[in-house]
Image (cartoon, rainbow, N blue to C red; front, side):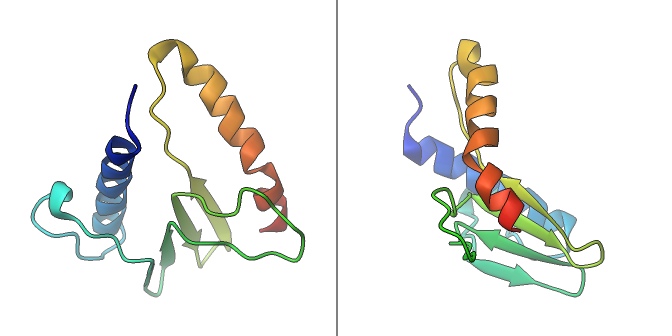
Length: 106
């Protein structure tokens, strides 16, 4: 069983990598990375554990990371799970269904 703390560390590592990719400071080591709720430059906006408001009631409205591409006006929703090997496909399907309402609102 993987703890929530481990998943949080993986999320922080992914966030750190995304910061580097999009021109934000990450720090010297990903494990020391402290993610900010909102990072924004002229290209993208990166949201960390951020409540996404919508006109309709959407249960799953706080994904781990959201990247908003300002040029294409598209958003990439990232929700990280660390299931056991045999549960990977099931967990992926669960996450796709979980954020389907949010995706239609964005």
